Image (cartoon, rainbow over all chains, first blue to last red):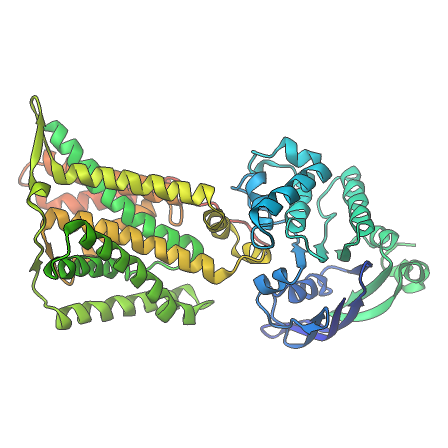
Length: 234
Length: 293
Protein backbone atom coordinates (compact mmCIF):
# COMPACT_ATOMS: atom_id res chain seq x y z
CA UNK A 1 0.00 0.00 0.00
CA UNK A 2 2.81 2.37 0.95
CA UNK A 3 6.40 2.12 -0.06
CA UNK A 4 9.23 4.43 0.83
CA UNK A 5 12.24 4.08 -1.43
CA UNK A 6 15.72 5.39 -0.66
CA UNK A 7 14.29 8.36 1.23
CA UNK A 8 16.77 11.06 2.19
CA UNK A 9 15.88 14.14 4.27
CA UNK A 10 18.08 17.13 4.95
CA UNK A 11 17.59 20.06 7.31
CA UNK A 12 20.14 22.54 5.99
CA UNK A 13 23.49 20.78 6.31
CA UNK A 14 22.20 18.07 8.62
CA UNK A 15 21.14 14.75 7.13
CA UNK A 16 18.27 13.66 9.37
CA UNK A 17 17.50 10.65 7.21
CA UNK A 18 20.28 9.08 5.13
CA UNK A 19 18.41 6.23 3.55
CA UNK A 20 15.12 4.67 4.53
CA UNK A 21 13.34 1.93 2.60
CA UNK A 22 10.17 0.39 3.90
CA UNK A 23 6.88 -1.03 2.72
CA UNK A 24 3.54 -1.28 4.44
CA UNK A 25 0.96 -3.74 3.11
CA UNK A 26 -2.76 -3.23 3.39
CA UNK A 27 -4.12 -4.09 6.85
CA UNK A 28 -0.72 -4.29 8.51
CA UNK A 29 0.74 -2.51 11.50
CA UNK A 30 4.34 -1.62 10.84
CA UNK A 31 6.37 -0.21 13.70
CA UNK A 32 9.19 2.21 13.02
CA UNK A 33 11.41 2.15 16.08
CA UNK A 34 14.73 3.60 17.16
CA UNK A 35 16.34 6.04 19.53
CA UNK A 36 15.67 9.76 19.74
CA UNK A 37 16.90 11.52 16.60
CA UNK A 38 17.08 8.34 14.53
CA UNK A 39 14.88 9.94 11.85
CA UNK A 40 11.53 8.31 12.65
CA UNK A 41 9.43 11.46 12.85
CA UNK A 42 11.16 12.97 9.83
CA UNK A 43 10.28 9.86 7.83
CA UNK A 44 6.60 10.15 8.83
CA UNK A 45 6.73 13.88 8.04
CA UNK A 46 8.00 13.14 4.56
CA UNK A 47 5.25 10.58 3.93
CA UNK A 48 2.62 13.12 5.04
CA UNK A 49 4.17 15.90 2.94
CA UNK A 50 5.16 18.15 5.85
CA UNK A 51 8.89 17.59 5.37
CA UNK A 52 10.43 17.78 1.88
CA UNK A 53 12.43 14.76 0.74
CA UNK A 54 15.94 15.58 -0.48
CA UNK A 55 15.79 12.46 -2.66
CA UNK A 56 13.96 9.16 -2.87
CA UNK A 57 10.33 8.34 -3.40
CA UNK A 58 7.11 7.82 -1.49
CA UNK A 59 4.57 5.66 -3.33
CA UNK A 60 1.01 5.29 -2.05
CA UNK A 61 -1.42 2.96 -3.83
CA UNK A 62 0.88 2.86 -6.83
CA UNK A 63 1.02 6.64 -7.23
CA UNK A 64 4.10 8.75 -6.54
CA UNK A 65 3.15 11.20 -3.79
CA UNK A 66 6.66 12.56 -3.16
CA UNK A 67 6.59 16.34 -2.92
CA UNK A 68 2.80 16.68 -2.91
CA UNK A 69 1.33 19.25 -0.50
CA UNK A 70 0.15 17.83 2.85
CA UNK A 71 -3.47 18.62 1.99
CA UNK A 72 -3.22 16.65 -1.25
CA UNK A 73 -1.76 13.62 0.52
CA UNK A 74 -4.45 13.82 3.21
CA UNK A 75 -7.10 13.74 0.50
CA UNK A 76 -5.61 10.52 -0.87
CA UNK A 77 -6.43 8.83 2.44
CA UNK A 78 -3.24 9.14 4.48
CA UNK A 79 -3.71 10.72 7.92
CA UNK A 80 -0.89 11.74 10.25
CA UNK A 81 -1.42 11.98 13.99
CA UNK A 82 1.54 14.22 14.76
CA UNK A 83 3.96 13.96 17.62
CA UNK A 84 2.79 15.94 20.64
CA UNK A 85 -0.82 15.53 19.41
CA UNK A 86 -1.07 19.15 18.22
CA UNK A 87 -4.80 19.40 18.73
CA UNK A 88 -6.28 22.89 18.30
CA UNK A 89 -6.22 24.09 21.91
CA UNK A 90 -8.56 27.07 21.49
CA UNK A 91 -11.18 25.08 19.54
CA UNK A 92 -13.79 22.84 21.13
CA UNK A 93 -13.57 19.08 20.82
CA UNK A 94 -16.53 19.32 18.41
CA UNK A 95 -14.70 21.83 16.18
CA UNK A 96 -11.50 19.78 16.24
CA UNK A 97 -13.48 16.78 14.98
CA UNK A 98 -15.38 18.85 12.45
CA UNK A 99 -12.16 20.09 10.83
CA UNK A 100 -10.82 16.54 10.70
CA UNK A 101 -13.69 15.45 8.46
CA UNK A 102 -14.41 18.72 6.66
CA UNK A 103 -13.11 18.06 3.16
CA UNK A 104 -13.36 14.30 2.92
CA UNK A 105 -17.11 13.81 2.77
CA UNK A 106 -20.44 15.66 2.48
CA UNK A 107 -21.66 17.36 5.68
CA UNK A 108 -24.31 14.74 6.43
CA UNK A 109 -21.78 11.92 6.23
CA UNK A 110 -19.37 13.88 8.41
CA UNK A 111 -22.03 14.05 11.12
CA UNK A 112 -22.52 10.28 10.97
CA UNK A 113 -18.78 9.82 11.12
CA UNK A 114 -18.59 12.10 14.15
CA UNK A 115 -21.27 9.99 15.84
CA UNK A 116 -19.13 6.88 15.18
CA UNK A 117 -16.12 8.61 16.72
CA UNK A 118 -18.11 9.59 19.80
CA UNK A 119 -19.15 5.93 20.16
CA UNK A 120 -15.54 4.83 19.87
CA UNK A 121 -14.30 7.54 22.28
CA UNK A 122 -17.03 8.14 24.89
CA UNK A 123 -14.76 10.62 26.68
CA UNK A 124 -15.02 12.94 23.68
CA UNK A 125 -18.80 12.95 23.91
CA UNK A 126 -18.52 14.00 27.53
CA UNK A 127 -16.19 16.89 26.65
CA UNK A 128 -17.82 17.74 23.31
CA UNK A 129 -18.13 21.47 24.07
CA UNK A 130 -14.88 21.76 26.04
CA UNK A 131 -11.83 23.45 24.49
CA UNK A 132 -9.18 21.00 23.36
CA UNK A 133 -6.53 22.74 25.46
CA UNK A 134 -8.42 21.86 28.64
CA UNK A 135 -8.23 18.09 28.07
CA UNK A 136 -5.61 15.93 29.75
CA UNK A 137 -2.77 14.42 27.72
CA UNK A 138 -4.54 11.09 27.27
CA UNK A 139 -7.79 12.73 26.26
CA UNK A 140 -5.91 14.91 23.78
CA UNK A 141 -4.32 11.81 22.27
CA UNK A 142 -7.79 10.27 21.83
CA UNK A 143 -8.96 13.51 20.23
CA UNK A 144 -5.95 13.63 17.91
CA UNK A 145 -6.63 10.06 16.74
CA UNK A 146 -10.38 10.66 16.40
CA UNK A 147 -9.72 13.87 14.45
CA UNK A 148 -7.50 11.97 12.02
CA UNK A 149 -10.11 9.19 11.67
CA UNK A 150 -12.83 11.74 10.86
CA UNK A 151 -11.45 11.91 7.31
CA UNK A 152 -11.95 8.14 6.87
CA UNK A 153 -8.29 7.54 6.02
CA UNK A 154 -7.16 4.21 4.61
CA UNK A 155 -3.82 4.56 6.28
CA UNK A 156 -2.90 6.27 9.51
CA UNK A 157 0.55 7.42 10.60
CA UNK A 158 0.90 7.54 14.38
CA UNK A 159 3.84 9.50 15.79
CA UNK A 160 4.69 8.53 19.38
CA UNK A 161 1.13 8.00 20.62
CA UNK A 162 2.41 6.87 24.04
CA UNK A 163 4.56 9.93 24.69
CA UNK A 164 3.86 11.57 28.04
CA UNK A 165 0.93 9.30 28.93
CA UNK A 166 0.36 7.40 32.18
CA UNK A 167 0.85 3.61 31.87
CA UNK A 168 -2.88 2.70 32.00
CA UNK A 169 -3.59 5.27 29.32
CA UNK A 170 -0.85 3.83 27.13
CA UNK A 171 -2.62 0.46 27.36
CA UNK A 172 -5.90 2.09 26.37
CA UNK A 173 -4.30 3.79 23.36
CA UNK A 174 -2.62 0.59 22.21
CA UNK A 175 -5.82 -1.44 22.62
CA UNK A 176 -7.45 1.14 20.44
CA UNK A 177 -4.72 0.86 17.80
CA UNK A 178 -5.22 -2.93 17.73
CA UNK A 179 -8.97 -2.36 17.39
CA UNK A 180 -8.46 0.01 14.46
CA UNK A 181 -6.39 -2.58 12.67
CA UNK A 182 -9.11 -5.20 13.18
CA UNK A 183 -11.41 -2.77 11.40
CA UNK A 184 -9.09 -2.84 8.40
CA UNK A 185 -7.01 0.28 8.84
CA UNK A 186 -3.38 0.17 7.77
CA UNK A 187 -1.06 1.64 10.39
CA UNK A 188 2.49 2.96 10.39
CA UNK A 189 3.49 3.45 14.01
CA UNK A 190 6.48 5.39 15.26
CA UNK A 191 7.27 4.51 18.83
CA UNK A 192 10.16 4.90 21.26
CA UNK A 193 8.72 2.24 23.52
CA UNK A 194 10.10 -0.66 21.50
CA UNK A 195 8.68 -3.47 23.65
CA UNK A 196 5.19 -2.06 23.32
CA UNK A 197 5.55 -1.48 19.59
CA UNK A 198 6.78 -5.01 18.91
CA UNK A 199 3.87 -6.44 20.89
CA UNK A 200 1.32 -4.90 18.59
CA UNK A 201 3.08 -4.72 15.21
CA UNK A 202 3.23 -7.33 12.44
CA UNK A 203 6.59 -6.17 11.22
CA UNK A 204 9.07 -3.58 12.39
CA UNK A 205 11.86 -1.46 10.98
CA UNK A 206 14.68 -0.29 13.25
CA UNK A 207 16.30 3.06 12.44
CA UNK A 208 19.60 4.34 13.77
CA UNK A 209 21.30 7.54 12.64
CA UNK A 210 18.90 7.95 9.75
CA UNK A 211 19.37 4.48 8.34
CA UNK A 212 17.53 1.17 8.50
CA UNK A 213 19.68 -1.16 10.59
CA UNK A 214 17.23 -4.03 10.94
CA UNK A 215 13.86 -5.07 9.55
CA UNK A 216 11.72 -8.13 9.97
CA UNK A 217 8.65 -9.55 11.66
CA UNK A 218 7.95 -8.27 15.15
CA UNK A 219 8.68 -11.75 16.54
CA UNK A 220 12.06 -11.97 14.84
CA UNK A 221 13.05 -8.54 16.10
CA UNK A 222 11.86 -9.18 19.64
CA UNK A 223 14.25 -12.13 19.84
CA UNK A 224 17.15 -10.53 17.97
CA UNK A 225 20.22 -9.83 20.06
CA UNK A 226 20.70 -6.33 18.69
CA UNK A 227 17.18 -5.22 19.56
CA UNK A 228 17.27 -6.94 22.95
CA UNK A 229 20.52 -5.26 23.92
CA UNK A 230 19.95 -1.84 22.44
CA UNK A 231 16.23 -1.27 23.02
CA UNK A 232 14.70 -3.85 25.30
CA UNK A 233 17.35 -3.70 28.01
CA UNK A 234 17.70 -7.45 28.17
CA UNK B 1 -22.38 67.43 23.99
CA UNK B 2 -21.12 64.47 25.98
CA UNK B 3 -23.44 62.12 24.11
CA UNK B 4 -22.10 63.47 20.82
CA UNK B 5 -18.50 62.92 21.98
CA UNK B 6 -19.28 59.36 23.02
CA UNK B 7 -20.84 58.67 19.63
CA UNK B 8 -17.79 60.16 17.90
CA UNK B 9 -15.42 58.13 20.05
CA UNK B 10 -17.20 54.84 19.42
CA UNK B 11 -17.54 55.63 15.73
CA UNK B 12 -13.81 56.36 15.32
CA UNK B 13 -12.99 53.33 17.47
CA UNK B 14 -15.18 51.18 15.22
CA UNK B 15 -13.26 52.22 12.10
CA UNK B 16 -9.93 51.50 13.82
CA UNK B 17 -11.32 48.17 14.99
CA UNK B 18 -12.32 47.14 11.44
CA UNK B 19 -8.88 48.05 10.11
CA UNK B 20 -7.00 46.46 13.00
CA UNK B 21 -9.07 43.32 12.56
CA UNK B 22 -8.10 43.16 8.88
CA UNK B 23 -4.42 43.43 9.79
CA UNK B 24 -4.82 40.86 12.57
CA UNK B 25 -6.61 38.28 10.41
CA UNK B 26 -3.84 38.28 7.83
CA UNK B 27 -1.11 38.36 10.49
CA UNK B 28 -2.64 35.47 12.43
CA UNK B 29 -2.64 33.25 9.33
CA UNK B 30 0.46 34.18 7.33
CA UNK B 31 2.58 36.14 9.81
CA UNK B 32 2.57 39.18 7.53
CA UNK B 33 1.99 42.73 8.68
CA UNK B 34 0.44 44.10 5.53
CA UNK B 35 1.52 47.71 5.22
CA UNK B 36 -0.36 47.92 1.93
CA UNK B 37 -3.62 47.57 3.90
CA UNK B 38 -4.03 51.36 3.76
CA UNK B 39 -3.87 51.31 -0.02
CA UNK B 40 -6.77 48.82 -0.07
CA UNK B 41 -8.69 51.48 1.80
CA UNK B 42 -7.62 54.21 -0.63
CA UNK B 43 -8.51 52.02 -3.60
CA UNK B 44 -12.00 51.45 -2.22
CA UNK B 45 -12.32 55.21 -1.79
CA UNK B 46 -11.45 55.81 -5.45
CA UNK B 47 -13.79 53.00 -6.50
CA UNK B 48 -16.60 54.78 -4.65
CA UNK B 49 -15.69 58.05 -6.35
CA UNK B 50 -15.62 56.41 -9.79
CA UNK B 51 -18.93 54.61 -9.24
CA UNK B 52 -20.62 57.84 -8.20
CA UNK B 53 -19.13 59.73 -11.14
CA UNK B 54 -20.43 56.98 -13.43
CA UNK B 55 -23.87 57.71 -12.00
CA UNK B 56 -24.46 54.52 -10.00
CA UNK B 57 -27.03 54.89 -7.21
CA UNK B 58 -25.33 55.35 -3.83
CA UNK B 59 -25.96 51.84 -2.39
CA UNK B 60 -24.67 50.23 -5.60
CA UNK B 61 -21.59 52.46 -5.55
CA UNK B 62 -20.85 51.41 -1.96
CA UNK B 63 -21.27 47.76 -2.92
CA UNK B 64 -18.90 48.17 -5.87
CA UNK B 65 -16.35 50.02 -3.74
CA UNK B 66 -16.30 47.45 -0.94
CA UNK B 67 -16.08 44.59 -3.45
CA UNK B 68 -13.14 46.35 -5.11
CA UNK B 69 -11.32 46.45 -1.77
CA UNK B 70 -11.94 42.74 -1.20
CA UNK B 71 -10.93 41.70 -4.73
CA UNK B 72 -7.85 43.91 -4.63
CA UNK B 73 -6.77 42.22 -1.40
CA UNK B 74 -7.14 38.77 -2.99
CA UNK B 75 -5.26 39.95 -6.09
CA UNK B 76 -2.52 41.41 -3.90
CA UNK B 77 -2.03 38.04 -2.22
CA UNK B 78 -2.04 36.21 -5.54
CA UNK B 79 0.39 38.53 -7.29
CA UNK B 80 2.71 39.83 -4.57
CA UNK B 81 2.57 37.55 -1.53
CA UNK B 82 1.97 34.04 -2.86
CA UNK B 83 5.33 33.89 -4.68
CA UNK B 84 6.90 34.86 -1.33
CA UNK B 85 5.23 32.07 0.62
CA UNK B 86 7.59 30.58 3.16
CA UNK B 87 9.91 33.60 2.97
CA UNK B 88 11.14 35.32 6.13
CA UNK B 89 9.05 37.85 8.01
CA UNK B 90 11.39 40.63 6.85
CA UNK B 91 10.99 39.73 3.17
CA UNK B 92 7.21 39.71 3.53
CA UNK B 93 7.27 43.06 5.29
CA UNK B 94 9.44 44.61 2.57
CA UNK B 95 7.15 43.17 -0.10
CA UNK B 96 4.17 44.83 1.55
CA UNK B 97 6.07 48.17 1.66
CA UNK B 98 6.82 47.78 -2.05
CA UNK B 99 3.18 47.09 -2.89
CA UNK B 100 2.14 50.06 -0.78
CA UNK B 101 4.58 52.48 -2.46
CA UNK B 102 3.71 51.21 -5.90
CA UNK B 103 -0.02 51.72 -5.40
CA UNK B 104 0.52 55.21 -3.95
CA UNK B 105 2.50 56.22 -7.03
CA UNK B 106 -0.17 54.76 -9.28
CA UNK B 107 -2.84 56.78 -7.44
CA UNK B 108 -0.75 59.97 -7.58
CA UNK B 109 0.19 59.72 -11.24
CA UNK B 110 -2.83 57.88 -12.55
CA UNK B 111 -5.48 59.93 -10.77
CA UNK B 112 -4.16 62.99 -8.96
CA UNK B 113 -2.03 63.89 -6.00
CA UNK B 114 -4.74 66.30 -4.84
CA UNK B 115 -7.82 65.26 -2.87
CA UNK B 116 -10.87 64.53 -5.02
CA UNK B 117 -14.27 65.49 -3.68
CA UNK B 118 -16.71 62.62 -3.24
CA UNK B 119 -20.37 63.64 -3.48
CA UNK B 120 -21.83 61.92 -0.43
CA UNK B 121 -25.63 62.03 -0.12
CA UNK B 122 -26.84 65.03 1.88
CA UNK B 123 -28.58 63.03 4.59
CA UNK B 124 -25.22 61.60 5.72
CA UNK B 125 -24.14 64.97 7.10
CA UNK B 126 -27.46 65.57 8.87
CA UNK B 127 -28.25 65.06 12.53
CA UNK B 128 -31.19 63.93 14.58
CA UNK B 129 -32.06 65.06 18.06
CA UNK B 130 -33.57 63.39 21.11
CA UNK B 131 -34.65 66.16 23.48
CA UNK B 132 -31.38 67.84 24.38
CA UNK B 133 -29.14 65.47 22.46
CA UNK B 134 -28.07 66.03 18.88
CA UNK B 135 -26.50 63.05 17.20
CA UNK B 136 -24.84 63.05 13.78
CA UNK B 137 -26.19 60.63 11.19
CA UNK B 138 -22.69 59.80 9.85
CA UNK B 139 -21.16 58.65 13.14
CA UNK B 140 -24.32 56.70 14.01
CA UNK B 141 -24.22 54.83 10.70
CA UNK B 142 -20.54 54.20 11.28
CA UNK B 143 -21.27 52.57 14.64
CA UNK B 144 -24.06 50.40 13.23
CA UNK B 145 -21.95 49.28 10.26
CA UNK B 146 -18.94 48.45 12.46
CA UNK B 147 -21.11 46.50 14.88
CA UNK B 148 -22.79 44.52 12.09
CA UNK B 149 -19.43 43.76 10.45
CA UNK B 150 -17.99 42.53 13.75
CA UNK B 151 -21.03 40.31 14.39
CA UNK B 152 -20.98 38.91 10.86
CA UNK B 153 -17.29 38.13 11.12
CA UNK B 154 -17.76 36.45 14.49
CA UNK B 155 -20.57 34.27 13.11
CA UNK B 156 -18.45 33.37 10.08
CA UNK B 157 -15.43 32.42 12.20
CA UNK B 158 -17.51 30.39 14.68
CA UNK B 159 -20.05 28.68 12.46
CA UNK B 160 -18.57 28.04 9.03
CA UNK B 161 -16.03 25.33 8.33
CA UNK B 162 -13.68 27.79 6.61
CA UNK B 163 -13.95 30.19 9.56
CA UNK B 164 -13.20 27.39 12.02
CA UNK B 165 -10.27 26.33 9.86
CA UNK B 166 -8.98 29.92 9.96
CA UNK B 167 -9.07 29.97 13.74
CA UNK B 168 -7.27 26.64 13.75
CA UNK B 169 -4.72 27.85 11.18
CA UNK B 170 -3.86 30.81 13.41
CA UNK B 171 -2.84 28.23 16.00
CA UNK B 172 -1.17 25.56 13.87
CA UNK B 173 -1.33 25.93 10.09
CA UNK B 174 0.46 22.66 9.26
CA UNK B 175 -2.07 20.57 11.14
CA UNK B 176 -4.94 22.25 9.30
CA UNK B 177 -3.28 21.14 6.06
CA UNK B 178 -2.95 17.61 7.47
CA UNK B 179 -6.76 17.63 7.71
CA UNK B 180 -6.81 18.02 3.91
CA UNK B 181 -7.83 21.68 3.98
CA UNK B 182 -5.95 23.59 1.25
CA UNK B 183 -3.57 26.27 2.50
CA UNK B 184 -4.44 28.50 -0.46
CA UNK B 185 -8.14 28.56 0.44
CA UNK B 186 -7.40 29.66 4.01
CA UNK B 187 -4.95 32.36 2.94
CA UNK B 188 -7.18 33.70 0.15
CA UNK B 189 -10.12 33.90 2.57
CA UNK B 190 -7.97 35.77 5.11
CA UNK B 191 -7.08 38.37 2.47
CA UNK B 192 -10.65 38.55 1.20
CA UNK B 193 -11.92 39.30 4.71
CA UNK B 194 -9.19 41.87 5.36
CA UNK B 195 -10.03 43.59 2.05
CA UNK B 196 -13.75 43.61 2.87
CA UNK B 197 -13.04 45.20 6.24
CA UNK B 198 -10.69 47.77 4.65
CA UNK B 199 -13.39 48.57 2.08
CA UNK B 200 -16.03 49.07 4.76
CA UNK B 201 -13.65 51.20 6.83
CA UNK B 202 -12.93 53.28 3.72
CA UNK B 203 -16.65 53.97 3.24
CA UNK B 204 -16.97 55.15 6.85
CA UNK B 205 -13.79 57.23 6.57
CA UNK B 206 -14.84 58.89 3.30
CA UNK B 207 -18.32 59.53 4.68
CA UNK B 208 -16.77 61.76 7.35
CA UNK B 209 -14.46 63.65 4.98
CA UNK B 210 -16.21 63.59 1.60
CA UNK B 211 -12.88 63.36 -0.24
CA UNK B 212 -10.27 60.84 -1.37
CA UNK B 213 -6.53 61.34 -1.81
CA UNK B 214 -3.63 58.97 -2.51
CA UNK B 215 -2.45 59.01 1.11
CA UNK B 216 -5.91 58.57 2.59
CA UNK B 217 -5.23 55.10 3.99
CA UNK B 218 -1.92 55.90 5.65
CA UNK B 219 -2.96 57.51 8.93
CA UNK B 220 -5.92 55.28 9.82
CA UNK B 221 -3.95 52.11 9.05
CA UNK B 222 -1.01 53.35 11.12
CA UNK B 223 -3.46 53.84 13.98
CA UNK B 224 -4.96 50.43 13.31
CA UNK B 225 -1.51 48.89 13.43
CA UNK B 226 -0.97 50.50 16.82
CA UNK B 227 -4.38 49.21 17.92
CA UNK B 228 -3.52 45.68 16.77
CA UNK B 229 -0.21 45.74 18.66
CA UNK B 230 -1.83 47.08 21.83
CA UNK B 231 -4.54 44.47 21.58
CA UNK B 232 -2.05 41.65 21.03
CA UNK B 233 -0.76 41.14 17.48
CA UNK B 234 -2.63 38.35 15.73
CA UNK B 235 -5.42 38.27 18.31
CA UNK B 236 -8.78 39.18 16.80
CA UNK B 237 -10.58 40.15 20.04
CA UNK B 238 -7.42 42.09 20.90
CA UNK B 239 -7.57 44.03 17.61
CA UNK B 240 -11.17 45.04 18.27
CA UNK B 241 -10.42 46.03 21.88
CA UNK B 242 -7.32 47.96 20.80
CA UNK B 243 -9.23 49.75 18.03
CA UNK B 244 -12.02 50.93 20.29
CA UNK B 245 -9.59 51.86 23.06
CA UNK B 246 -7.48 53.96 20.71
CA UNK B 247 -10.49 55.69 19.12
CA UNK B 248 -12.04 56.48 22.46
CA UNK B 249 -8.80 57.83 23.97
CA UNK B 250 -8.16 60.01 20.90
CA UNK B 251 -11.60 61.61 20.97
CA UNK B 252 -11.50 61.94 24.74
CA UNK B 253 -8.16 63.78 24.62
CA UNK B 254 -9.34 65.93 21.74
CA UNK B 255 -12.36 67.01 23.75
CA UNK B 256 -10.64 67.58 27.08
CA UNK B 257 -7.09 68.74 26.36
CA UNK B 258 -6.55 72.49 26.78
CA UNK B 259 -5.61 74.26 23.52
CA UNK B 260 -1.93 74.65 24.46
CA UNK B 261 -1.39 70.90 24.89
CA UNK B 262 -3.68 69.74 22.08
CA UNK B 263 -0.87 69.38 19.49
CA UNK B 264 0.70 66.75 21.76
CA UNK B 265 -2.36 64.52 21.53
CA UNK B 266 -0.69 61.80 19.45
CA UNK B 267 2.41 61.89 21.64
CA UNK B 268 0.23 61.37 24.70
CA UNK B 269 -1.65 58.50 23.03
CA UNK B 270 1.60 56.81 21.97
CA UNK B 271 3.04 57.21 25.48
CA UNK B 272 -0.04 55.37 26.69
CA UNK B 273 0.66 52.63 24.14
CA UNK B 274 4.22 52.27 25.43
CA UNK B 275 2.91 52.08 28.99
CA UNK B 276 0.45 49.31 28.05
CA UNK B 277 3.16 47.32 26.29
CA UNK B 278 5.54 47.67 29.24
CA UNK B 279 2.96 46.09 31.50
CA UNK B 280 1.57 43.61 28.97
CA UNK B 281 4.15 42.97 26.23
CA UNK B 282 1.85 40.39 24.59
CA UNK B 283 -0.94 42.97 24.33
CA UNK B 284 -4.28 43.26 26.09
CA UNK B 285 -5.67 39.94 24.79
CA UNK B 286 -2.70 37.86 23.59
CA UNK B 287 -3.03 35.58 20.58
CA UNK B 288 -3.10 31.81 21.13
CA UNK B 289 -0.29 30.04 19.33
CA UNK B 290 0.70 26.43 19.49
CA UNK B 291 4.00 25.81 21.23
CA UNK B 292 6.08 23.60 19.06
CA UNK B 293 9.26 21.79 19.87
